[in-house]
Structure formats: C-alpha cells, structure tokens
Length: 205
Ligand code: TYD
Image (cartoon, rainbow, N blue to C red; front, side, top):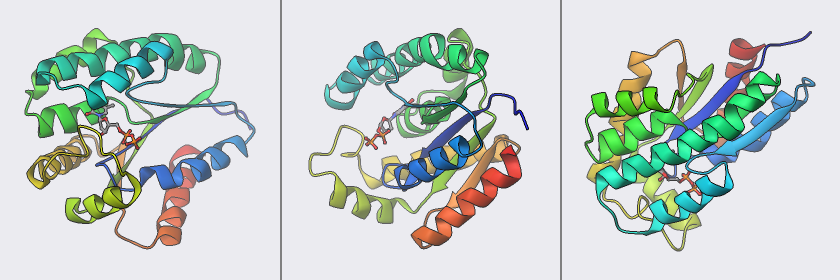
C-alpha cells in the first residue's frame, strides 16, 4: 500500500527520553518500505549544525537565540524537509517549531505572537504527527545529569525554566489535540515504547 509522505516530530523537555525511541520509530517506518529522512533541530544542515553549536554554547540575548533557531529552521525547511516530502520521503525530526514555542516562548518568555510571525516567515510546515514526551522536570534533570557530563546552555537552566517549558508544551498539546500526542515518559521504558508503537499504528498507517 502506498502512503503519502509524512512529517513526524519528536518533542519534550531535556531528559524526557525522546532519543530512546528514535531507533524503533525509524525501524517502524522503514519496515513499511518507505524512504525516511531522519533529522534534528537546531541543525539538519551544515549551516544549521554550525548555528546549533553557537546557540547551545555561546551566551546571547534571548531574541538572538530565537532568531538563530528560526534561521537554522529556515535552511532546514528549504534544503531538507520540503525537498524530501516533495520526493515522497517521510521525515522524522528530533524537535521542530513546537520547541521554539516551549523553550523560547515558555522558557524565555518571548511572546507567542512573535513566534507565530517567525513561523509564518520561514513557511514552516505543520507536522502530521508530533509525539510529546512528557516528564516531571525534576526526574528529567536527574536523567540529564547521568548522561550529559558537560551540560549545554539549556541543560544548565533551573527548575522553574523547565517547568515553564513543560507547561508551554502541554499548552501546545491542548491547542492542537489532533496533531500532538502526549506520552507519559514516567512509565517503564518497554511499556513506553509499546505505547509509542501503538500511536504510530493508529495515527500513521
Ligand atoms: P536536544 O535536541 O535535546 O539535543 P541533545 O539530546 O543532544 O541534548 O538539544 C537541543 C536543545 O535546543 C534543547 O535543549 C532544546 C533547544 N531548542 C530550543 O530552545 N528551541 C528550538 O526551537 C529548538 C529546536 C531546540
């Protein structure tokens, strides 16, 4: 059965566990005989990866941070995402526009109407499905400290920052219930993976 190209994004606060499921999601998709492009934000292009290293490590104003996220996204959309989808490939992106609403909007308190305008300027496509891995920031922080000996600028943020990021993500999920599926990352890993697979089966095939 031929399926139209799909655009899938993964979201969640740092340490919420989305990375643990990327391989099984890739496997689920490619098993169905479709071509898949796996990518990430910030990044996804050489220029975007360069901007990623800046924005994760250099001190800067919050609006500069926001504009860098969108500059990287603009290249990513034009060079990678749109060409792939037009060629009939599926695209799986580790973070996309919702991350800017959560981190720059919720975390840094950039107004959402500014972010909506930037989203329109880069002509960001709306994903077909977004999996939002949701976890208590206190538990997520413990996981980050175990796997990230040299935390980046975001991972170094305090609990109140991540509480706002999480709340902004959940607000996005309430605003777009058809697109964003919230998965409870507090449950045991294999159970969570089964839950992710069930969502893909239900939503994508
Ligand atoms: P992440 O994708 O979680 O990578 P890793 O798993 O290697 O730590 O890290 C990217 C960071 O960038 C993450 O803390 C969220 C942040 N971010 C934003 O603040 N805004 C954005 O628009 C995007 C895409 C990411």
